[in-house]
Image (spheres, one colour):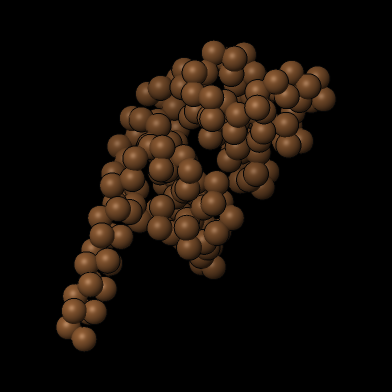
Length: 170
């Protein structure tokens, strides 16, 4: 019995360590699931909380997942706090990395899905234009594919733009 308990605690410790030291690639893989699953969102939030300083792509994802946390709380004040904190992290990351297509895409996807009443939708056209212009130069094939797939499904993307994105789906 002691061996089983010891093994269980080692397993929990390993999970805890894993979740606290996520790489950017791991965050990229988990983030889409966090948008649909509160448990994954909370895990990602816990892993990124306190590690983001607003200077890099990981900070942008921390901002995104912080905004997602607003969905899983019923308290309207907590919802606004999560939203404001996440927005600040994401905007700081973009301010420090204006030419990062991944951060611009992250903001586009967030603004594309938020209710207009929050007033955080002023960058949709600007970000989409930037993404459309620089997507062909993005050297990360899987990221380019994911961005293209998202934009093809977005109502904010024109039919002509969707056609030009299809070549990145493979």
